[in-house]
Length: 79
Image 1 (cartoon, rainbow, N blue to C red):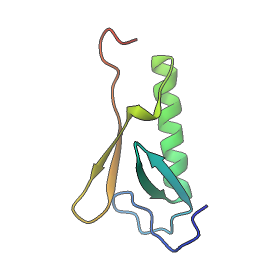
Image 2 (image 1 turned 135 degrees about the vertical axis):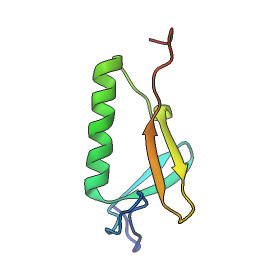
Image 3 (image 1 turned 90 degrees about the horizontal axis):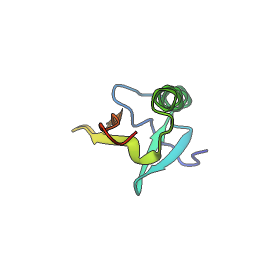
């Protein structure tokens, strides 16, 4: 849980962040709905690929301090 007041860092979100997640040495703050959405997306990617790691997350910083999170596609031959 996040103790200090912080808004969710996801693009176009103004909700209060409840979860602090460290990805590749970068801390991102997420509201509960965006965290749940990210977990669901990772589960679906793992079902398709057989596994997934935090390194698969790609964080794109936007100009307004917000972020966009992508799950990198598996490369051919890496399955």
